[in-house]
Length: 283
Ligand code: GUN
Image (tube, rainbow, N blue to C red; front, side, top):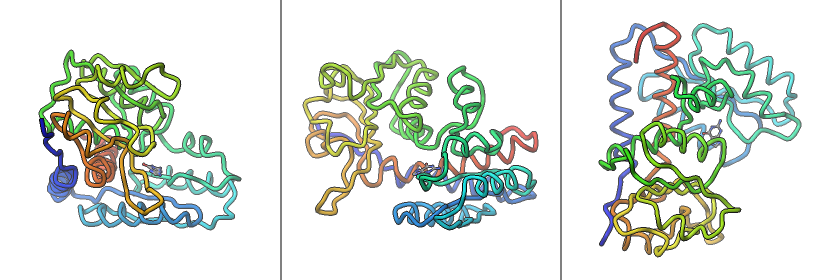
């Protein structure tokens, strides 16, 4: 079997176009503020891409750049100011933050109604208990890709490789809400390969280059590769050995061009949802 490639760039472009069309009908532009502290070069690329995509889709988007030496108190004061600004619908504080700042404290200070990353404990709790809230962008993007791939989830055996707060845990909650039978596996799991081989839907989110080998994948499985790893030779690869996996999977996302573009598109979707939610309009 040769796997069908799930084109994240195409799905993301379609979602951004749908959002732009919806925004064009609104009497206001939803406001997004991205806060960047210091000048981590990888963050710079992300932040510019977010800003460009947001502006193109019709959002009122701005990046607030603070110096590396910013204190936690200064950053908390800025977050409070954005919480109280009626023109701001979504707040994203780019991670990682400099070491003098407690990132958890900053994330917990963001108004949950403006928490477009979905990282606040209130939003994580809503997701865990099946209530409506803002959902982390990457796992939300994965759910869009599974829908586009036509993967049926009800009753399916889904395996999530990785247990981070940003991807693994919310991913498992979303799959469970879609009636999948979900297993979360991680670095301490015995016989990872055997657990992955049972998956009809495999989500890899561990950040280990090409860790998932071809023979870890059941024939015909849908494989979503969340990993983006840069090798010493400069190549970008996922957590899945793509060239081996395409001989086993039924459908698979590439890296780059799979999950990555969906994360930004879902950030915009969350910002629109937050804007409508704050004004009491259903999405
Ligand atoms: N750094 C890398 N990805 C992300 C993200 O999705 N959200 C935030 N806040 N920081 C990041």
